[in-house]
Image (cartoon, rainbow, N blue to C red; front, side):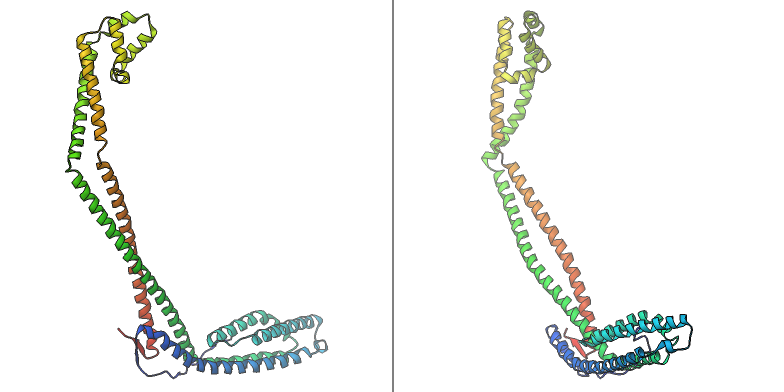
Length: 390
């Protein structure tokens, strides 16, 4: 067990009864003043503890000198008991030497740290020495008990001193905690300021994107009212009409061609037969490859061409030329470009508004944390008869 595992008495510590209303910016200075005042009390307490430690060190060194001078072999006992006792005394002496070394190294920087350090030293000492003490006292009682008694006296006096300073320790700890909370609040305030600055920039970006989107939409609307766009729409309508006309006339042209007679005429010629086969399989595709030139050539060579066929071919070819012109004109349409740019702006706006929403949620979270910390700080200040200005 540690040095402080005993009943501790409670004594009153005089606090400042003056009431103060503080602005948040004044709290740190106020606490620093209180900390300085408590530091003087703490210094006195540390001096008292240091005196107790010095007294214990002196007693332990003297007690250890006496213990080491004991001749255990001269004691009347069996060899086994003597061996156990000699080993116990030897180990306990080493424990005492280690305890002296540790106590002598205490820096006495603060009351809370010193209390914790001493308690840890004696917890370790108790753990290491208890068995050694029992073995040593098999034949050496008085000298061993003297050392243990010195530790008991020190423990009693130390506990008494610390009990008298209990409220002082509590106030020192509360100030330490309050400084920690102020540091957290200041970090949150810094985070909130950065977030405000970020939000201003974000608001400007959102406004800029919205303005750009509106301007682009207006440009598109104006463009759709221009003569240029009307011509493009006309070209697109012509495209649809011409595509239907070409399909219809090609069907008519195909029906006028006597593929059976052509095959009979060219049946000995593989190249010509391959052309005819392709025309039968996909007339439109073959026709578009050379605008019907190969087909007309075969018809002329076989004497199977007709005026109606030639006239229809000319009409189809003319419509293909018109189809190309209207297609090229339709490609001048700026609407797809407007749509693409508007989509980009809308996606950008959506991304910015998502970031904005996340920032709002984060801000709500940190503001809530700040309020909890501030409420805790207010309660802490009540211990010093002070409150925060609303």
